[in-house]
Image 1 (tube, rainbow over the protein chains, first blue to last red):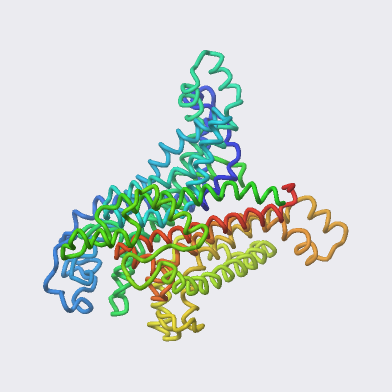
Image 2 (cartoon, rainbow over the protein chains, first blue to last red):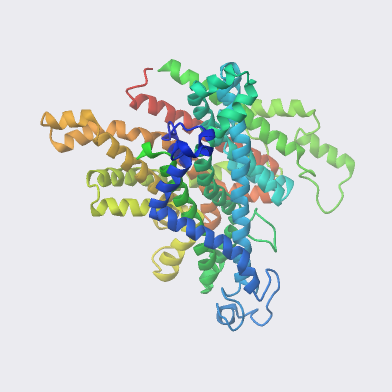
Length: 313
Length: 307
């Protein structure tokens, strides 16, 4: 909901039809301008670099791992506090978890799962939300009020409980998690896109397209949607950390991905339960990755918004 | 005003019905039945059990009766798991606990958040402003389920000041950590929203006019600027309420406070469908009601909305 508000400020993006971007003599395009502004934002740049590093790490990291995610190191079982410490000698760079599995591999896998959930949630939001919102906004009238009333109703349902209900009734699985997240992630996007579409649909280029004989759906998808990409990009980036938070919340409750697979939320939950025995690294490593990941996404999203909508400042 | 409230109710009631129907359908399509145990029960016995819980009637009739009982008698029916308890009993036990720490957290987040936001805006780029901005950025990535273990680590395990769990009839020492864990991220958001909206209002023309005619500074802030600057915060209170309600699941699990969140998770793990359904509907209704209150409050504060 936070993102909603921030997007709400993004009233009218600079009007620059995508077609112009390919014509070099037109000078700087919207996207080049945005890229320039983004590069000047140091926090966003650092975050982007951080994000790239984390993603690279999830690909390169496993090559250096000496243990996989489920093999139990029997030499540390029973004395995790003394022998399961982070160390290069044992090959457990981040230490082991409570039952003697390598935390390094598990953190990498958890990061991958969290990233995947965040990105899948955003992709669903982009696809469903954009089409839904653009259609509702462009056609307006009764269709619009029915479609948006439906969104209103879904929005005011406490989805977290429905999601927990879904996971318990149909069993915990990746697919259920994605279905649940997909069900809710597009609502905000649909609202934002609808508002933007309504602002765009009376512009001259839309009129020109209609005059040129384009069918209504062609106008929506060929002419309006490309002009929404800036808003959509910002919103999608800001949605990723929220999806990661959501998944972590579910995992914290023990309803997320199933063992031996893991996610950052599940690892934080395990670490939180065992920290009283002094094995603080079990909480610290997943927590560091979690916080860095969220920070990066928030700052990149903020930077993108500032870059694509200079009026907001 | 009345017409406005009625119009909002016209959206709220269908929403609630949709919520009941969705939860009910989910419960019906769930595989297995709640009475399936290790030993096979004779069919006659099972039939009796079904008749006792009203499960022998057609589904649509069950749904209508359920809605009737919930709406007119506030009766969520018997628990499927505990023979001697009704869903109402379970809710009555957990709800006061959740309400206590939830209300404190709500107050804490709102009052501190608004004050900090106003102070930061009045002293822009001062130390209090930097503190507020730093806090709001930091807390954005520290959700309650991260906050809770960190608080316990510091205040229970290292400093040994406060108990790391339990409720003890609502003793203050048991309330402090849950409230902080629940409130922090919302406190940060409210601070950020309040700060930016206050800055915007303070820069507007009518505030300049108020200052120009020689009003004292505090009067400008409290009589002229505060009310319009509160609007974005008020509209954020709905999400805050939802967050407190869902957050209670984490708080109850982590601090063993025994609130409604714990009841929800327990019944979910026990497949006590009637209890899950009851709690979902109750919390959904509260959410919808909270949004309604926020809408009305917003309309009441905002001079631009004519009722």
